[in-house]
Length: 319
Ligand code: DGL
Image (cartoon, rainbow, N blue to C red; front, side, top):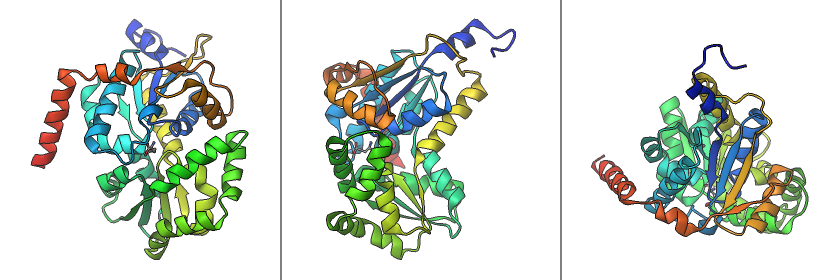
């Protein structure tokens, strides 16, 4: 219910969509949680599939992408931006928060917060892309919440390829996909890879493991089998959705029920493929997926943005 005396500006804000982006399809797991938690909100989702994966790229490249996509979403008048990609959050969240007028929420802090709440022995493991792990973002976020927590992290880049293959080869909904991932990857090749990544974490005695990459929740069953049932797995999608709810509620910017609610999906890659694979994650059709040219995004990275990025990097170098 809109409050009595609410200003027209506030009412307009309520009707604006939430902008969400990821390097590709994985962020749809976060979008799905946000839509479950906030069924009245309109959303605009951009998957930068043409430039995926972000994981092996330099921080500088990923930051540029974050600024470009943030600007693309801002031009569509979103009321809040969710960086639904761990690598992009780790590299570019503070920069995006400085650059844009609306709140920008990432997935690292919510995941770290959930892990810190869940751990009993205060030993937390994190797996993610090379970019995410090398940035140290999860360790910093966890220690900012509880300085007594020890974080053990390992990059697990081959898990991303595995999920991509599974998405392309499997059939059915996300639930089907999850059970296929659970059974299809109970194979020697998966276990060998999983052991390489996960055995050191098991030896460190972690009781909680953060799935610090949008793709990894799709391997949850298999990872749980390797880690053992006593290790709690954390995916940040739900926690991130909770943070979006809290932010919009505190600002009085939550949408009410409306017949004009919209869902827009866009990709820099192939819209048909994005629609087909995305429908499996969301559990229903995405409608017509819009194509956005990478050149259109690159054109948004103007002199002001370049200057902002240079200043940010200079600040970082100075410590
Ligand atoms: N979306 C990325 C993340 O959560 C995984 C895929 C990529 O490397 O771009 O880190």
